[in-house]
Image (tube, rainbow, N blue to C red):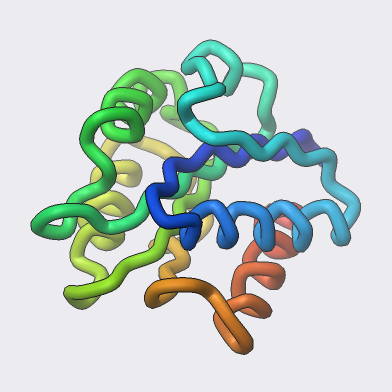
Length: 142
């Protein structure tokens, strides 16, 4: 089982909670997991991860966070071509367009994406908490 790197941006704590739950699911499935805020991450460190997991909430007009996460994603996309990745994030409005666009962007870059991403409305709780843990297990098996 490979080392999973989860790198996320969170403004309200919703996406951070998702990251922590995903990390728990992956660790419970036996994976080695590093989980950190994008402000503490560098694009070069993704070379050490077998699966790279990126998380961002929907911002503005349904885009990923623009000041830290977007530049990080831009920097790592070329390094992820042909590699395994997954994406996730929370939202408060809209219908998930930002996640569909992000998934298409990753796939267009030749990234082996687990699926079209996991989204949670606002703070994950109850069923959406379990979806995050399950997603972590799926990532560990990817």
